[in-house]
Amino acid sequence: MRANRLKTAFLIVCFSVGLYFGFVGDWPMLFPSWAAPAFLVFLIVGSVAYWRVLDETAREAHKFSWYWGSSIGVALVISVWLLDRSGLNFIQSLADAGTLGADPSEAFTNGAYTILILQTVIYAFVWGGWWLRMR
Amino acid sequence: MDNKLRVLRAERRWSQAELARRLAISRQSINAIETGKYDPSLPLAFKIARLFGMKIEDIFTDADEVSNG
Image (cartoon, rainbow over all chains, first blue to last red; front, side, top):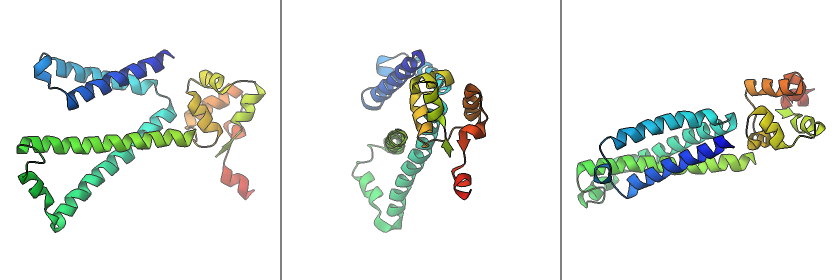
């Protein structure tokens, strides 16, 4: 019971911080410079502790979901890139229009976020499907 | 893989939650194993066998072996 509460609390904290920094703010504006590495350490330690309290079906669910979530997420991004390379050349047009980011640095960051978000969304669907199938 | 977990649990009048507690796993895991949707690892199968004082092969049977006679 206590382990379940800890797991839930850890997930809520990580999800909230992730949402905050993904969509609302930047580190330097509100937090001191040590906050980012401190959160990273918390994330690593918390992840290890979280993994240890999971039983084997919950671990399998994560492994299965991450395998398919990450693979399909990357495959989708590669498909878009291959489509572009096959002669459609829409990526350059989007970049010229400023849709991908104001500068190369922002475009790179947005690209990384796109892969991560796709992987995470598909991961969540697969994870939900796993537990629905196990019911 | 087939198993007799539900029968063995019922014989002892344990709920899924009680069996889960004794094995230190989640109730969802017990349900998944009982319904044959998840095959436990060897360490967990040994743990289950120890709990019921039986051999693994007395609890878990290979479905192909059974159908092949």
